[in-house]
Amino acid sequence: ALELGADVTRRNLDYSGTAPAGASPLMTMEASAIFLPSVLVEVLPVAGLVPEPFAGLGAFAGYRRSIGFKVKDPTQSHSAELGRLSAGALWRLPPLTQLRLVFTPEISYERRDMTVSGGGIAGLPDSHLRGVKAGSALFAPLTPRYALLLDAGYVVWTSSKDLIGGDVRFFPSGNASAFELDAGLSAALFGRYSARFVAEYSSTSYSLDADPTSTYRASGATDRYVGVRATIRADF
Image 1 (cartoon, rainbow, N blue to C red):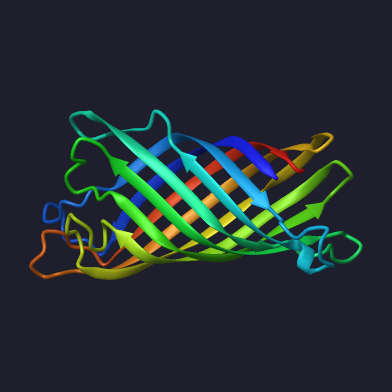
Image 2: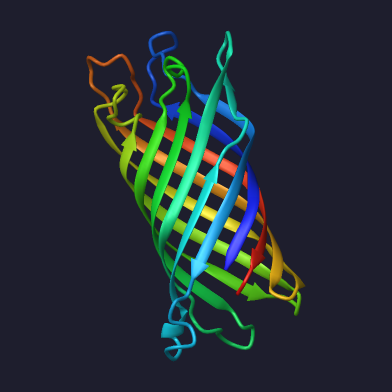
């Protein structure tokens, strides 16, 4: 299968347990209407060669990258870039019950990057997340033409620069994880083609171990993305 489309998403980054006003230079961030063209490829290499349920074993890879993304500080506007990469294995199980529910467990490598050009903005960390995601998708037919789409997963970020570690020292240690949920609708068009419309939610929670001598003070942070995605899918 091949999916081509685009996302429009909103980012909100804020902190908890910060120092009193004026003592901490950490900057929150709100950015709306970030536009990201996207591509997704799914391959089931043994379909038709082995019996169910093993015929549903496969792999997938998806990539999204922003276009025209800018971030403003109090004095000027900066070019920025948001990129997302997912690649892993899936197992599309045979339809269950009379409702023909199709569950697809997935495990994948995840990469998220949010950078500001020109040396960045003081107090605003770039984001370079790397980790492993486990989850499952659900395809639930509603009518011969329409189907409900659900996808939920949990990500353990094994690397979460620059907020934790990184070239610019914000916090010396800590940990981060994310919960992600997609929900939407698939509509058959003609032949092998369908359209998909999905609402997306992703929230990364940070636990931060501050260095008492460090400039930056906070006990935690939350980085949320909320958006919508529209794609055209072709199943071969």
